[in-house]
Image (tube, rainbow, N blue to C red; front, side, top):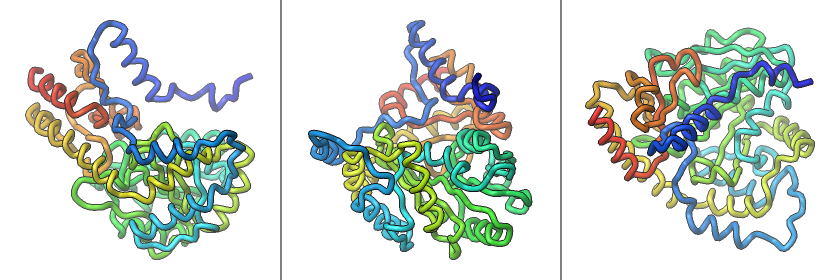
Length: 366
């Protein structure tokens, strides 16, 4: 018998995006895919070479605590980027990307029968991880008039985890340090953990986003970072969690059970990635160029790019996803991310610059 939690779930939204793309391709349509947020940017050659150099004749099982060199590189990056001191031995654990760690957090913490809170529209994994752990879920609408930030005062009293994700997928909104300070105060007063998904902190256009780690009290803050978007390494599956030592100890105890430590040769390539900023600057420049091509074309249609201050996404009010699909432009309907996404579509800036220019031409002809 199938787990009823799985049986009751709707199809994962991006499975539907991929199915739509395949149907169109099979019908001979030339599709420009702005749907799924999987970067097409090249992984930097030095990272690829580091991986090659690290592949051994025999690769044993990787240890859950990860290589000391990788933990040190992650902690040093947190220091350089956010000005915070993180202990690499007790406050960092490498992860298999960030998705699996996000999904499993509700199983590691004591959440059964308690509430896991997240804003919506949202990445679907916060909810799915909570439901599989037997937790209740509660959503807070993220509205334009509030800068797509949740109402901290509306967090229920029995909350175990509050998920936040800034820069935000799908809207591209960013959070201020003041917001993280207020959330940290609420967490201390009401005994919940802040789980901050920060996959997009390095994809910004005008101003560097802040981290939840920068709040003056981070004793209840768990931050999830990844190389997937920052370094265009989605398939490598490499990230880390930075958290208080008791949470990291729990993660180190849990993770061997499910076997999700990154391979050591991936970890060694990850050390190179965390230690370099040049390739990240180049990646930001490529996204900026694509953004600069698409925004005028979107504006010319009378549609509106909302928020979209960071990430690899444009959150656009006005267009109809099905109508764009008829012209070979695949985007994600805002409803994929929750009821508050109605009226919007998300463009993921993953096609090539040439494809973005062609998409702008198609938009001009609509």
